[in-house]
Length: 138
Image (cartoon, rainbow, N blue to C red; front, side):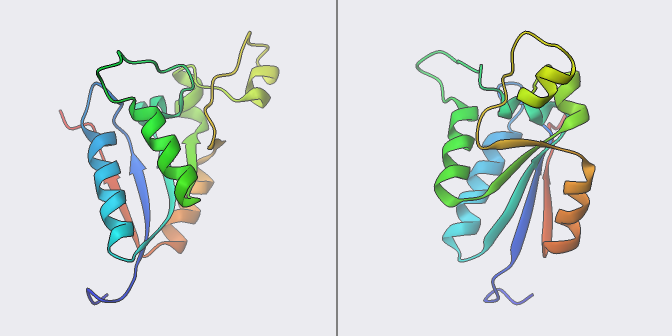
């Protein structure tokens, strides 16, 4: 792709907020992508990255709420956000459907995130020009 041809991106975030820089770096990258005329097809959360999809995140008032920042970003730009179902279930992130299936006392998946399987990630790879990963480091 030439620098002037718009690209479509899928972002994969595997690092958790507050224990890695992955969500912060990914959000800065996502904003730059849009500012430069490119498109983000979807954001896929995998591994510890699914913690971004928790509706129960509540950091101290003097810290950035990275879950809320991502929710606002996705909603304001109409970008799909997906949390890997296997990663989410292992870490206690569930939607209402999974809550009922496993007879759990509550659901905590924040909108606009959706629980999805790896098929969603495969579809991302097939339809995006670029897939960029944001890992936890370490």
